[in-house]
Image 1 (spheres, rainbow, N blue to C red):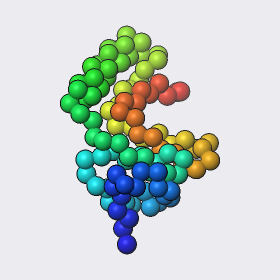
Image 2: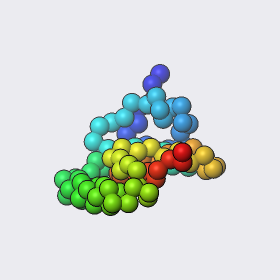
Image 3: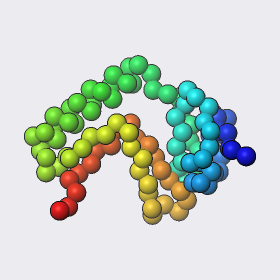
Amino acid sequence: VQLKIGPLDHGRAVTMDDFDAAEFEPGYRYEIIEGRVYVSPEPSFPEHYLEIWLRRKLERFGDTHPELIELVATKGRVFLPTAYRPTVPEPDLAVYAPLPE
């Protein structure tokens, strides 16, 4: 049986496997933090505009400082291996430093 997650599941304890296989109610963003589901509304238009503005600023900065910023991504999933329980925040923007050669 596939787990169905919606806004009423905010704070619910969940395993990483169940979260990855879950079906999510549309209109919300879902993350797993400290082994619990965190639910927030989808970004509104003004928030989306701010994300675009910030992404462009970071990309321009990265163009002039490639030693600091290699990539600005609009989709990110950050695994925190040192967290006690599964913690995988999904930021609106993720900035990646150059990988060591």
